[in-house]
Image 1 (cartoon, rainbow, N blue to C red):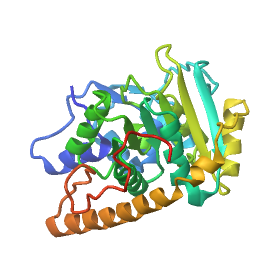
Image 2: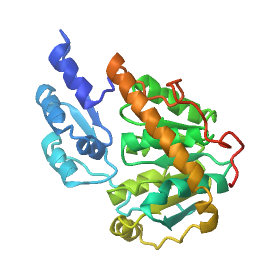
Image 3: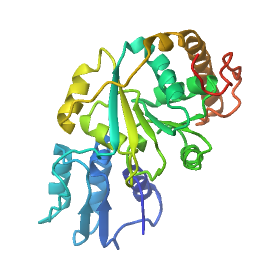
Length: 307
């Protein structure tokens, strides 16, 4: 049994002496839409060219995109299609909210929500690896037990972050869409879409990290002045209008000074991490390593409470 990403499998086919797939009987392509969205089309084509034609092929995809349909035609012969549901739905026990805010105050609103819902476990989704790392550093400088998970971390670092969160040693996991599906994380109370997903269907996968196995959960989507159209697409997809999450604007504004200082420290730490990686050819993106800047914002170590 061989489990591999397309890129690593092609690497072995091209560079590992004696490695081949001539004895392959079954080919399973899981989350085909994600594979193709990550630009693995060339690698998939190379794999299909060197495996036996008389194999049995199973293709799984959460969404049937044009790319997946093209792959289906290339990889399958007289396929049997099994569709679980044609609707994009969220579970009944998931309470979904949004907040409409100016983009420059996103960090302050995030800290406010973490304070208001203290005691819960959070998954916070960001659109890029850099913003995931930056936000994790910012929250740690404010005393939150936050840890990142993204594609620019080594496999060992990713597993370390995931295991700490699953063991409840950390209460906040910040991630890119690499964690929106395929991971077994049983105890997520709140999902926060800090950066709104570009593709509406990714919203379903993200909020599906909570309210699992009959449990209840919350999701909160940040909507800035630049995200209105994307948010409207999400509401159209799920077939419902989301209510606004109740906020106390005055309390949010009281956080801005402390948050600004945490932002400054996070920028310094990102620069140090970049210099460290360049000088040592290191892939260490762990916010918990000692990297020079470790002075906490005044008051940040205190138990999460409103300023």
